[in-house]
Amino acid sequence: DTGVSQDPRHKITKRGQNVTFRCDPISEHNRLYWYRQTLGQGPEFLTYFQNEAQLEKSRLLSDRFSAERPKGSFSTLEIQRTEQGDSAMYLCASSLGGLQTEAFFGQGTRLTVV
Amino acid sequence: GESVGLHLPTLSVQEGDNSIINCAYSNSASDYFIWYKQESGKGPQFIIDIRSNMDKRQGQRVTVLLNKTVKHLSLQIAATQPGDSAVYFCAVKASGNTPLVFGKGTRLSVIA
Image (cartoon, rainbow over all chains, first blue to last red; front, side, top):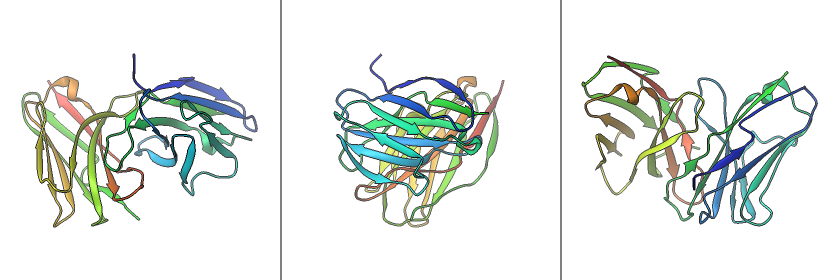
């Protein structure tokens, strides 16, 4: 399977704990995006990378959130001191880059904070 | 910034009928548009895209129409099948290095 891969698929954590999610994009794609989706809503943009450079961060991305893409391949999204409001589906997508190429999504990581 | 609106949150159609899902956007500088299909528990799946220099594009059983004058986008699904039941999102991108902005989605239910 050469699609976007996310791990884990599900994560249940206690409030206050840190969590880290991983995304492996399609191999030749140099752009990688993180989105968050809550029930009944469309995906909301969090941040994106062009190779290893983080080019844009949404205001939704509080100081507790950090994303990295150290070698321009896989990416991690870490949430520190999780809150119940962080419960959502975290989606990763990748694209070839350029201005108008389609983004392909992974299956997402569903986070539940209890 | 861009905002993407929804015309109907839900749509029910008979199997075999055609479906039309609508979307409106706010930013006249938007130049790239994608329709995604999302099934329960899965990530959005790319269906079809269109660039602002076109007003119509066809795929297999799907057609996307773009009306830049009124900033409106639609997805037409021909001969709707039970497997088409899902939530459909339009996503819009402005020119430059801007991310896709998604609407809230339309839930399509196909009645057998």
